[in-house]
Length: 350
Image (cartoon, rainbow, N blue to C red; front, side):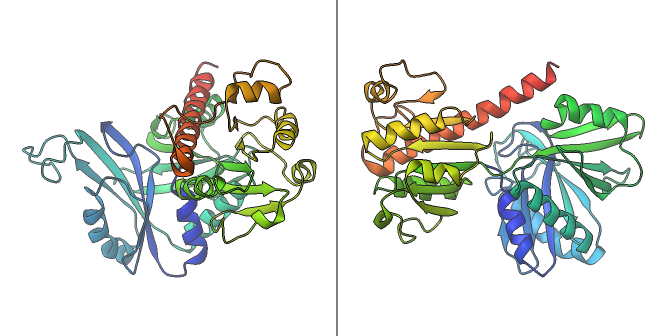
C-alpha cells in the first residue's frame, strides 16, 4: 500500500520542518515507481523509502540545504550503468533513470497535506497535481477531490486538458503530462483512501493476519461476538475491535469500494450469516477461510461466486496461522493491484 498514509500521520503529529520527496518520473526500471513518496525530518528521521537503499543517503544529504533555501528542486539519478559518467551508485543494477522532486514542507503545504489526510480519512479519492517550472522546481500545486473540492497553491482555473485527464482516468497513471496551454509539465497522481480490512473472527489465527495487514498498510477492523477474544492485547495494531453479533457489527460498518473482508470465525452458523450480510456490500474482496466445499455449504449448495475467494489466500501450501496469514495477505495485495490496473484501463478506454 502507499506510504503516503504513514507520511501524513507523521506530518499531522510533527511540529518541526521536513522535506517531502516524490518520484515524479521513471525511465526504464526502478525499485519504486511514480507516485512513491518519503519524508525526511530535520532530526534525520526518515519515513518510507524510494529505493532499496541507493538513493536515500544522497537525498538526506540535500535536506539541510533545501530547508535553508525553502525551495523545491528536482534530483535526477541515472541508475543505468555504473560505468556511465552520470550513474549513481556502484553496480546498482536497477537500469533506470529516476526523477525525484524534493519539497520543503512549509506551513502552507503542511496545512494542505493535513486537508489531504482528512479527505482520505473520509474515504475520498484525491488527485494531486504539481506544475513544474523551467528551473525544475514546483511553481504551483493543487489537490482536487472526486467531489470537485479544490485546495492548494494554484492560481486561476485548471486547464481543460488537465481536467480531461482527471475525468478520463489518465491522472490515475502517475507521472508527468505536458499541458500545451500552460507550456509546462504537470505531475499528476491520485491518492486513494487506505484500504480497510474487516476480519470477522478474533481467534488465534486472526492475530498474525491483523498484524501483517496493519504493517502492510491496511486499516484493520476486527469483529467477534466472543468478548473475551476481542482484547486489545491480541490486536495492538487494529484500528478498531468490535464485540458483537454479525448483524450488530454490520450496522456499525458502512462498507465502501475500498473495503475487503475475511470471514474466519470457525463457527458455521455465524459464517453463513456473515457471508449473507457481506455478499451485497460491494467489497473488492471477500474471502472465506476453509475449503471450497464448506463455502458451498455456507451458500446453501450454490456455487461459490467468482468474486468470493474460497479457499482464501494464495496456494503456497501454507500451514499454521502465520503462513496462512501470509497467503491471505499476498492474495489481498495481488487482487488490490489488479483492481487498480483494471480501473486504469477502463478509464483510459472511455
